[in-house]
Image 1 (cartoon, rainbow, N blue to C red):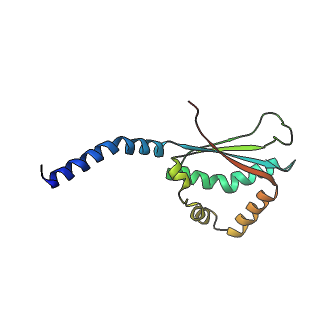
Image 2: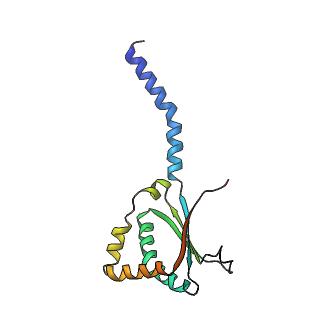
Image 3: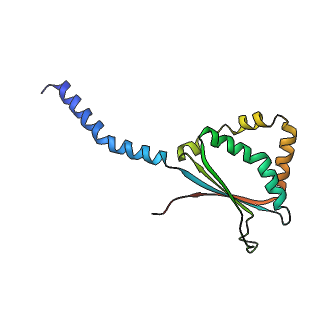
Length: 145
């Protein structure tokens, strides 16, 4: 066997042996990446926070659903009160198309400029939304089999 044929056979075998690895990596990259975002507002201001969230942030998220970056949006609140330490007012669960998509740059700033031409009002309302927020944290979720 000549050297050229040996090299061809070597790289063909290498490519075939890496194919399952490539398939596994592609499968992992295509799995939805779910993140829960928790919001805790000052007492008595949760409704105002939610109104501003729905007015200014939810439409931006929905545009990302339209583009395919985000697969789903779910907004929930607890049925009953918890202790102050464990209290949260709203949980927003976003399922991104993949971890790769989640970690890639988003078009959020462009979307904001597009759907909110009055940037002064938008910025003032977003500032108010965060003024009444006591805490915010993000929890990436892993499925358990």
